[in-house]
Image (cartoon, rainbow, N blue to C red):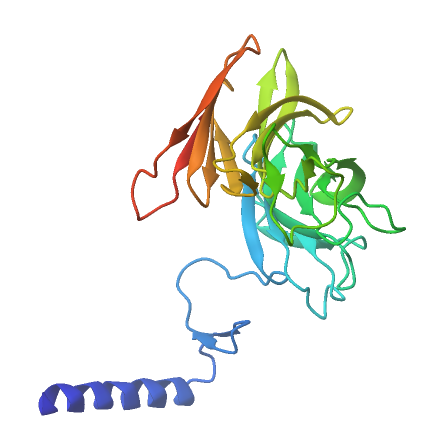
Length: 289
């Protein structure tokens, strides 16, 4: 035991001596106040605060990174989306003026490219002003960005209204003020699906316990899938959704027990039924076929 401790101490002293004697040793300061010494192959790019999601463009040219923290000095406290050009290895950050520290809304988890890679969709959630009634507030919805030669610009905003609750459901206290019989959507994960040659969005609404199929061209909700599991909403908290390559089936990931709902290509639904968690090691899945 004593010999092992001695070897460990000597190794630490040797490492410290080598690093101090070689000022050329690469050092990368991390946001955690730690320093990364002599990184391996590749490059470490500095991002805005709290990057949560990475989306890859369909052509494989770009990777988009969603930064939904409190911002940094460089971003002037604003949230942002960063674009990494995978051909040139160029990383550029695009802080959004609509998301300062004082905003009553926030970028959340969802991020996805359109099928032609010209647009980027990001989910936006709000509790304090769910409908965007106050000047400067966006409310809940999808921020649409235009991507052109690696540069990102805000294009428009698709607002998602409070979601109608099923009969017998009611909103739990503390989840914002909305009209009776409805719940704040708070869109989370999203995915682009192709139907009849057009892009549609499947959006997991974290606080209304449903997934909606949305037409991004006009913001119309084509169909809604109830994933609630109890009388109170929210109860399942769906926060992510994935789709098969042929856009015929999708699964949503929930934080709690969830309900399954099926969807066919002809738009017909079958009734929902409870789905028990598959294991304790990961959240259960809800299926939307």
